[in-house]
Length: 119
Image (cartoon, rainbow, N blue to C red):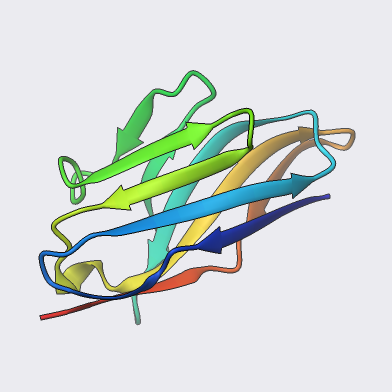
């Protein structure tokens, strides 16, 4: 069983920054892909960024150049540095991890953290 705990959300003014963190715990051999998703009110959940074990990041077009995803494999954590935030970035942000466990590959979601950007 894998658990993810997110932190770092909050209220920020447009143009500001926030740093989200997600820590994985539980029983697993290793975590393969780690990602951040978000879901705005009335919209579907969408991927924001993801990163493999080699540290190579991928971003949605809407956040390229403003957001940075990073991970610490030793600590099983993933972070999302969000700069130049705008009200359109308001959403619940979810951490997602793909883990290799005794039961095979397991995909796990965090509980979500609210990010609100005021204009």
